Amino acid sequence: MPSPRMLRRRPTSHRTERALAATGALSLLIAAAVTGLSPASSSASSHREAPLIAGDPRADNTDVYAFTSPEKPDTVTLVANWLPFQEPNGGPNFYPFAEDARYNIKIDADGNGKPDTTYTWEFTDHVRDEADQFLYNTGVVKSVNDETLNFRQTYSLKITDSSGNTKTLLKDSPVAPSNVGKASMPDYASLRKEAVVPLPGGGTAFAGQASDPFFLDLRVFDLLYGGDLSETGHNTLAGYNINTLAVQVPKSALALKGDATRNPVIGVWSTTDRRGADVAGAGGKGTEDAKAADAQGTPSKDGNNDDWRQVSRLGNPLVNEVVVPLKYKDAFNALSPEKDATVAPVVDKVKDPMVPMLIEKIYKVPAPATPRNDLVEIFLTGICKECGPIKADLNSQRLNQDVDKSAVVPAEMLRLNMSVPPAAKPNRLGVLGEDLAGFPNGRRLNDDVVDIELQALEGAAQTGKIVPALAAGDAVDTPYREPGDTFPYVALPNTAAVNQADSLHPDGGVGAGLGGLASGDGFPVAPVAALGGGALLAIAGVLALRRRRGAGQVPRGIPARARSSTTTTT
Image (cartoon, rainbow, N blue to C red):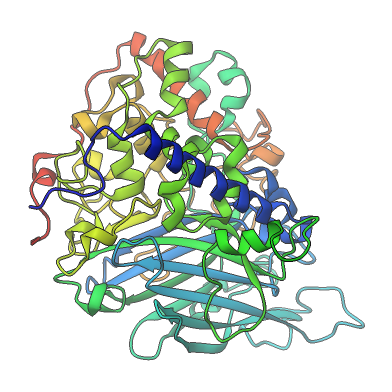
């Protein structure tokens, strides 16, 4: 196998380092200008992890999933979620997609950090009686086109190739409405089915509401559970809903040169664009808003002459929360992946992450030695033998036989090797649990990414062994509602108010208001203020204390079979 041109760890000249740092700093400054927008035009991704998200939750990417479809293994399913923390009883307006935004799922097949395939959704509102009615629905809703559904949405779905050629796949397709409740929508499952529509040439698409599949315990903000470790295990997101976009398409539709056998690895991320987003205080030529356009690359060639700007981005889970410094979070959301390697403050924090150092300082759990080239593989290059210290050929685009390796760049995205078949018995720890079909090789709805990334930050991916101090994780091991067996897989949305129902009630969330936390009898125990990198730190810190309680060894990390090539490379 040829030696890598980019990832070989050689000393770099100070001049090159300074140039790289300067380029990265400029990219961040320009991107920051893009995100210096008015509240109506700004956002951030992944469950409110960046400062500007409060201004525009409908543009907020929360999670991206990519996996080989278990019941159709010749296809891949891509799922992206937006608009977090939807209280089910959120009437009368509930939770529509934004009309003045574009929602994208992007795929990079050749590793250059630029999309080779982009799926773009745009939405249109339809109101039957705007003058004399305020209700979302005026009676029992039996279909997505029912006259009693006063407010409904439709969407167009377009596909754009790497040259900017765009084709419309769907037009005026129905969105599954927000689940108003059993009285209004007694058979919501049938409404969901109407929103699952075929794609021309093969494939399926979906847009609508779902139960949020992300799961974790964030009551760590309450003084580390007040010293009572028995209070772990509450899913903060239990009972909340999310807006989902999903496609299930043949692998050949995503693979480099349409050949998923020779070129099985893809990178996936989602973005949100806003039209006409002006940079605050921007002027004419040479000013910051002109630079911002350059920072985001060439404007989309989709046949639309309007000016669109990327305001949100998400690939791997929790990267912006626990890796990117606070100062750069909003700027990171405006960057396209091909520029990631030039952003020294971000790359530096991948190689020398904050969380392990803080854990060592506060809880005396030794941090792995730096530079963390194992994390560079997981987050920026994909895992391959020539990519870094993780001796496995798994999910780097360098494994694609027809790729131009000289054009491959480190870029943050969720990578999937489509040649790995679905697991007969999926392990929530994914690759660390000897299940190569799970995260970080793509991401399934049941993958426990909080526990996996905590282990990775503490070095488990490189050693191949689970870190005993973190073995129990956050004691939240599954989504609030189990995913389905068929597309779109996401569970039906919840209907009970989060602050009135607990985990014993199948139709809703758990108690305690904003945080959705409750004890077993429904007694509220704590609100949750926010999500972010401090969550992982606190979780790791608390769980590190368990090492003193005799936490033992658990299954090995990256298995021996992962260290052999999963694809044939040339």
